[in-house]
Length: 157
Image (tube, rainbow, N blue to C red; front, top):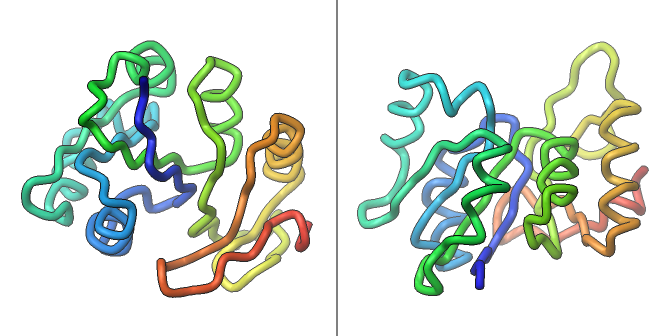
């Protein structure tokens, strides 16, 4: 059975907060980065590997490879699964990846997005994906670091 201990949306994917704080908090021993671009970019992979704590494995998979492979995980693998967008997670859920809750970390502001929290900005596509996830009984909460109080994203949309 797949042992996903934390799922997180973070446009930066793996950085200090994810590679150290969230890995430790979730007691993860492997990080799976599900992102089509990064799966084929060794430079980005090398940068992310540098911030992972010693003894923690990391994999860089496309969304499709994640769908096809994550079910094969050993029970001893405690997986922190990270994607850039709620749409990515929608795709994973549609593909059968067992997700029950999503930690929303960083979704940066840009001209076509509305800021709903300090580190979270959304557009229409993001909102539609969050509603899809809610319709599939997946809790989505904003929490930048483990010491912050989690906020249900649906109270802000």
